[in-house]
Image 1 (tube, rainbow, N blue to C red):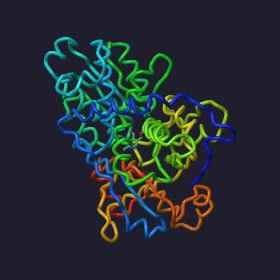
Image 2: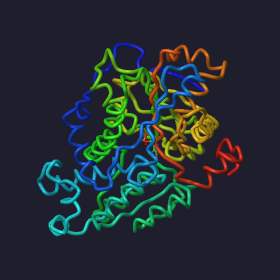
Image 3: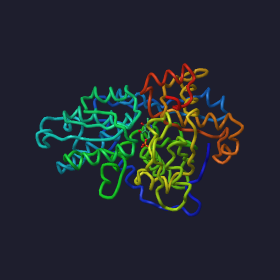
Image 4: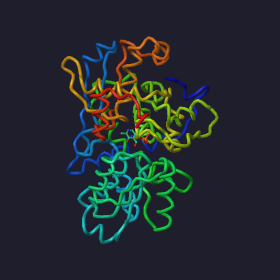
Length: 398
Ligand SMILES: Cc1ncc(COP(=O)(O)O)c(C=O)c1O
C-alpha cells in the first residue's frame, strides 16, 4: 500500500461549478423521472464502526441501482439524455424519461448507434439506455472481460464483444469506429474536442452523491472513492466540495489498484501532467483497470481531493467478505471487486498495525465518520463466489 498527497503547495483552483447545486438538481430531476428510479440504500454499519474504532461507517449500496447491479447507468443515461436534448435544441429539464423514450423523439432523431468501451458496468448502462430508446448500441470490452458481464450487455440487445485490447486501446477502437460509421461515442475519457459527453457522464454520477448527502445524518469527516479513469471520483469530490466549501469539506481519498494506478501516479508527480499506465493491467478490480485518467475528472481531484492510495487486490477481497458477512445488527451488502475496495481499505487501515502511519496521515480515529460507495454488487457472480467462499485474493493465475 502506498499513499501520496494531491497537493504539495497552494491548491490549483480549477472550475468545479459544473457540479454545483443548480447542475446537480437538474441531473437528479432527470433520473427521478425514470419509472425504475429509487434511491439506493445508505447502509449504516454501526457494529463495524465500533469494531474498527470509528464513530460512523456508512456505505452507499449501488447494487440496487435500476436493477443493473452498479452505479454506472447514472452517467451513461444522463450523457445520452443530454446529447439528445442538445440535438433537439432543448434543455435537459424539458426531456424527462417519458419524452426521451417517446416515438415522437425517436422520429425527430432518426436511428442512432451509441458506441462505447467498457469493462462491463458502463457498457451495460449505455446498452440499457439505448434499449429504452429503441436505439442501437455497440460495446467493446477489453481482453479478459467477464463472460457474465458480456452476457448482461448482450441481453440489452447491444452488439457487444470482448476484444484482445486493454481498456484504453478498446476506447481508441470505439472512437475509430465512431468516426468511421458516424456513431455517437459515449465514453468517460475526454480529450480535446471530446468534452461534452464525458462531462455529462460525470454530472450523471452526481445523483449518487446527492442521495448520499440527503441520507447522511451529518457531514462525513472522510470520503473514500475508488477510481478507474477518475470520473466517478471527480463527480463525488466535486459535489461535496461545492456543498461544504474548501474549508469544511471532508478529507477525500482516492483508491486504486496498484496495477492501474494512473491517478496515484499523476498525483504523486505534482507536475501538472497526466501520467499513464500501459500494457496489461491485472487487477481483479475490473472496473478500476484503467491506465489513463479522464482529464475533466482529474481537474476536480487536482483541486479538491486530498490523498491517493494504491493497494493490492486482497484489500478488495477483504472488503467483499466483510460486507457480505456483517457483525451485530449490521445489514449485509453484496459488494463486487471494484465496489468493495474502499471499505476493505478502511478496514485494513484501522486493523493492520503496518498501516498505522497512513491511518494517522488520514486522521482516521474514533471521531471519524466515514463514507464509502459500494459501486457494484456481484457483477461477476462466479468470481464473487470464488473470492468470498474460496478465499481467492487476486486475479493472478486466472
Ligand atoms: C463498479 C465500478 N466502480 C468504480 C468504477 C470507476 O469509475 P471511473 O472509471 O469513473 O473512475 C467503475 C468503472 O467502470 C466501476 O465499474
